Amino acid sequence: MQKKILSITNSLVKVLFFIIMCCLAFVVISSKLTGGQATLFGYQFKAVLSGSMEPTFLTGSIIAVKVGENPTSFQRNEVITFQMGNKLITHRIVTVHNTNGEISYTTKGDHNDGQDLWTVYPQNIIGKYSGFTIPYVGYAMNFVSSKAGASLLLIIPGLLLTLSALRSFLQIRKEFEQDLAR
Image (cartoon, rainbow, N blue to C red; front, top):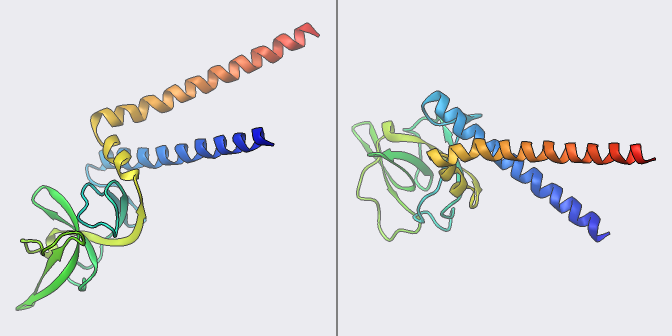
């Protein structure tokens, strides 16, 4: 019984690892092919690299950001992702400004003491946080986006396929030898 539980657990871990690898491969390959960010059903997945929004989401998580929404329609307390210089930032809107019909936002990280010093304009907004978070997978996503990580993303599955083929070959050989001995 214990062997069966161990076997099932081992299979589940392998399947989970395979699913994560496939998702990471999709994100990396599609972003490289398009020259931008991978979008799946209108969502982009972003790695959280700082603790400014804890406890809403933790450092190292990935979050889903809904893209394509009207950037002038966001309300106070919504969490948005925006471009500030060469950085992507995800913070909560604390104030919506409407100056002569021009909308802008003041934001703040949930874990930060004060508001951000900058103003966010609609043209800088990527999208709105959807509420979907997976803890710790952002570390892996950030790593596979690097050159070394992308290389490993190709090498590891190749090694696993080679090992699986070798294992199958050895099993077939063993069965063949057993059949010959009979």
